[in-house]
Image 1 (cartoon, helix red, strand yellow):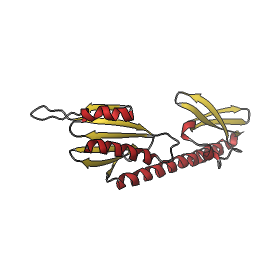
Image 2 (cartoon, rainbow, N blue to C red; image 1 turned 135 degrees about the horizontal axis):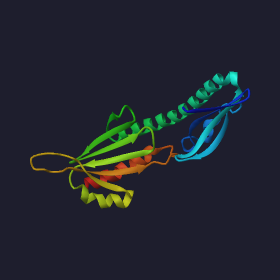
Image 3 (spheres, helix red, strand yellow; image 1 turned 120 degrees about the vertical axis):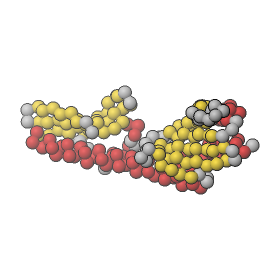
Image 4 (tube, rainbow, N blue to C red; image 1 turned 30 degrees about the vertical axis):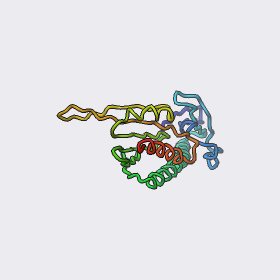
Length: 203
């Protein structure tokens, strides 16, 4: 956390960045100590930034920094609680759909995989944002790509670096699903997308 401080005679003013407005909900501030710390909203390159401001006697500036850390920690814990709840819901849905799970990148993402005939569907769910990546491995991906594109809009075919004596290249089809931040049940949209893809792969 970054702090900026000024002194005006015997009074100190400390400002610190909390996070961007898009990461928080109004109800997150219901327990925030607004009597001790004022809030300001300022435009920034990554969106509207929420700034905390403490003012008081210079000799109590240490207490102001401590209070800032405590209040910011409460807000971040609320956000992490929501992320954990969403992640648990997605995990439960994916396991019900027959996917196997593995953790990627020190817990920053969850990876689920499932075999459908000659194909393999891989779903990568970020635990820090609202992007879900669906990858399809197997034969004839270019054949199903236009069909999926008509449904999901953005579909990419990436070439994997696979080296063998015949110099063959394997490809994967990639779909990026954007989950709205206010979506309380993202697992529903993911499950719908998976069912559409599975039906196409099995026809």
